[in-house]
Image 1 (cartoon, rainbow, N blue to C red):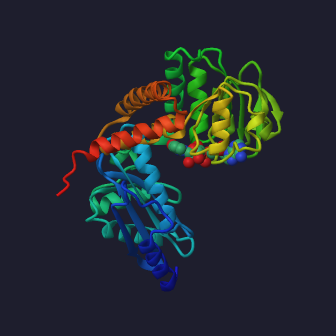
Image 2 (cartoon, rainbow, N blue to C red):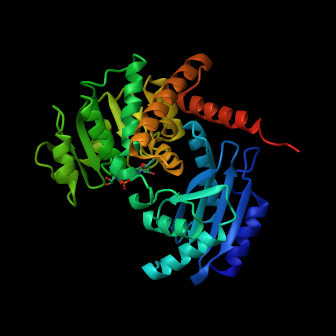
Length: 379
Ligand SMILES: NC(=O)c1ccc[n+]([C@@H]2O[C@H](COP(=O)([O-])OP(=O)(O)OC[C@H]3O[C@@H](n4cnc5c(N)ncnc54)[C@H](O)[C@@H]3O)[C@@H](O)[C@H]2O)c1
C-alpha cells in the first residue's frame, strides 16, 4: 500500500463512515507500519465481556473497514457463544505473496508492535496458520490457534465446529422438534466444517444422503458411508466416490431432506434460490450462508434456521478453551455445554418474544454485552 493510500485509510477511519461505530465500539483502532511495505490494522471492538479474541487476516487486499466489520462480528459471535471474551480482529496487508523468511519477519514485527495491546489476543484467519501464531506467541507470549506442542487444540482435526453442529441437532431433539436418528441430512461443503458435521451427525444415526464440494456432489438415498467417503476424499472430489450417484453440485439445494447444513460459503441461499430448498431445519455451518431476505422467507415457511453465531460457535469456543489453558476434552465439553444451552435459549427467546432465530440470538448477545458493560468503570 502506498503512503497516500495508508493516509486515506487513516482519514477514512477518522471519518468513521465505513464501519460500525456505535455504543459497542470500536474501543481502539491501531494502524501499524511493518517491514517490506506491509501495513496492519488492529481493531479492538468491545471488551466488556473480556479480552478480545479474533483472527489475524493476512492478504493483499485486507483493509481497515474489513477488519472493523470482522471485529464487530467477533464481538457478537463471542457474546452469542456465551464466552468471557470480547471481539477484536487484525489484518496485515501485504503488497505481494511473501516467502517464509519474509513472512516470519513481518509476523514477528506485527507481534512486537501489538505487545502493549494486551486486550487483544490474535488467532489464525485467512492467510495465517498455527506457525504464524507460534511466532506471535514466541514474541509476546499470547496467541491462540497454536501448534499442539505449544498447548494448541487442533480445531479442524478435532472437528470442533462440526461437533457443535451435531450438538445443535441434539438440542433440537431435546426440545422435541426433531429426531436425529433417521433424519435425512444434506451437507453443502466437505471441508473442515462440513466433513466433521456429516461424520458427527452420521455417528448419531442420521442418514447423510447428500454431500457436495466445490467440484460436485454425491447422493445416496440410503445414507452415504461417511467414514469411507472421508477416507476416499483426499485430492478427489466427493462426486468421484463410487458408492453413490453423482449429481450436479447445486442440485443438492433442491433435494428433500430434514436437515440442511450449508458449510461452504457465504450467501449460497438467496431470494433467487430459496424456493428450491426442501428441508425442515437449517444448521448454519458457514458464516452468513443465507441472505437476510431468504432467512426471513424460510422462517415464514416454518423452516427453523439455527444461525451461524449459535450453530457454528464450536470453533470460537475451542479457541477460548485453548486461551484458558484447557485441553481437547475440556474443549469438547465446553462446546457441548455451551452450544446446547445457547440453542435452547434461542428457542425459548423466539417463543417468548416472538422473534426470528437470528434476532433472538442477536438479542441474547447484546444483552450479555450490556450486562457486562454494567460492571465497567464509568468515571
Ligand atoms: N473452520 C472452522 O472452524 C469454521 C468455523 C466457523 C465458520 N466457518 C466457516 O465455514 C465455512 C467453511 O469453512 P471450512 O473451514 O470448512 O472451509 P474449507 O475450505 O475447509 O471447506 C470448504 C468446503 O466447501 C466446498 N465448497 C466451496 N464452494 C462450494 C460450493 N459452491 N458448493 C459446494 N461446496 C463448496 C469446498 O470444496 C470445501 O469442501 C466458511 O464460511 C468458514 O468461514 C469455519
